[in-house]
Amino acid sequence: MFEIGRVCYGSMNYRLNGPDSDKDYKVFLCPDFNDLYTNKKVEKNDLPANIYDREHFSPMDVRTFAKNLVSGNVNCTEYLFSMEQNGRSDFFDFLEEARQLYSDGYVMVCWDKFFASVEGLVKNSLDRNGENRKSVTRAYYFQMLVMTLLADNFKMDTHTWRNNGWNKDLQRMRFDEECWMPTREQIETTFAYLKETCKASVERFKKYNPEGFENLQKRGETLEEKMKAMVARFIYEEVGEDYYNA
Image (cartoon, rainbow, N blue to C red; front, top):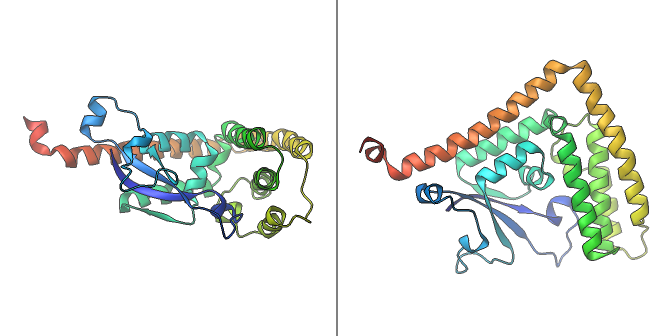
């Protein structure tokens, strides 16, 4: 496995970071020929401890990234709009194509899975950490993110994740002990409302613009094929033409 790119993820992307906040990175690893032959799965130990601080760097197979991105995993969509990205130019090309797809409303194609991943992220955080300023603000952040998507006709861009009017309010909620914050019950009630409202809006789009919906679907399939071609090219470059002609 070898690195082809990395992105920062977490509180910095949400504008909820403080002076003591750490930076965490997702490192995207591409399989080499031997990895494919042995059907190797990415493990944390694939990041050498002498190069990567494993507390703040975690790996992801680029094939998994592409698959989860097309299926609407909220963490993978966040990586697209990370404030800090590094990597090979062809990997950047993939990210740019994916960003354009989501900015055109692709999340409607995978809305059920996207919303489920957001709900799961929020629930797991509150279950694991309880109701404190960090966990509640994070949950409220994703509530506002879904509301922003609904208001923007499901077009996702950097405005969806930050640089909007409510980020500053959430920053205050996160660090100001005097600031109001919602209860878990209030958040869950709002999510229940958003689940029905957003689903109805997506269904209307599918009904009244079936060609537009189908076009987004096809572009999602093309995006995953782009990753497949990129990995194949890396393998070909590694083993060389002589191997295939042997």
